[in-house]
Image (cartoon, rainbow, N blue to C red; front, side):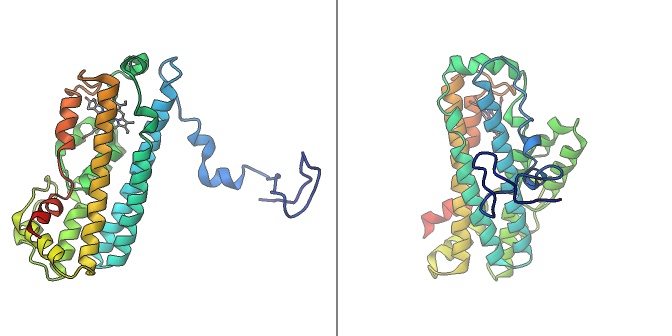
Length: 284
Ligand code: HEM
C-alpha cells in the first residue's frame, strides 16, 4: 500500500496536517471495517420508507448480540482459568454493550400498528425468534433448549455453532464452578448437571449467594455477583423493551413467527436471568 501527502482538493494545501487521499487499492479503513460490504446488506422487502429503519435496527442488534456473545465467552474462559479480573473486565464491557443494544430500540419503539402494517406482511414468517445469535446469548445465560436448534436445520454452520453452544457449560455454569473452587458450598448435583438442559434455580446456590452478599462488602465474589446482576437486569430490560415495542406496533395479534405474540413474549420476559442472584436478596 502506498500513500503520500497530496494537495487537498478544496484547500489546495499540502502538508502533514491533511489526511492521505491516495491509496493503491481499497482504503485501509475499508480493509478493516468492510463498510462497503456492511452497507450493501440492506434489502428491504417492501416499498415502505420506514422498513429500512426496521431492517437496520435488526441488523445492528445482531451485531451487538455477536459482541456480547464474544464477551461472555471471554468471561467464561477466564473463570475456567480462575482469572476473575479478566472475567470481570469482559462482563463490564458487556454491560456497556447491552446498554447500547437497548438504546437501539428507539427507532422501533414508537411504531403505530398502521406504520408496522405497511411492511409487516412482507416479512412473511420471518421473526427475531429465529435469531441464532440471540439464541446463543440465551444459552450462555443458562436458558438451554434443544428444540431451539430445529429452525436452523437448513443452515449447517449456524446449526453446528448452536449445537456446540448447547453442549457447552453456560456462563452461569462457569460461575458456579468457579465459586466451588473458591470453597463455596455449591451443591454437587448442580456442578455435575447436564449442561445441555435449562438451568433450574437451586436453594443451595441461593444460600451461597446469600452468604456472599451478607459477608465482606468489598469481597471480589460480591463484585462478581453484582457484575452478573447488572448483566441480568440489562437483558431483562431488552426483553421488556421488545415487549413494549411489540405491544405498540401490533397489539395482541399473532407473531410472524407463529406464536401468540405479546402473550408469549410476556411469559418469556417474566423469567429471571441468574435467578438465585435475585431470590438470595430476601435472605440478606
Ligand atoms: C416492532 C418491532 C418488533 C415486533 C412487533 C416484534 C415481535 C415479535 C414477536 C411477536 C415475537 C414472538 C415470536 C413470533 O411469533 O414472531 C418476537 C420474538 C423475538 N424477536 Fe421481535 N419484534 C420486533 C423487533 C425485533 C427486533 C428489532 C429484534 C432484534 C433482533 C427482535 C428479536 C426477537 C427475538 C430474539 C425474539 C425471540 C425472543 C425469545 O426467544 O424469547 N425483535 N418478536
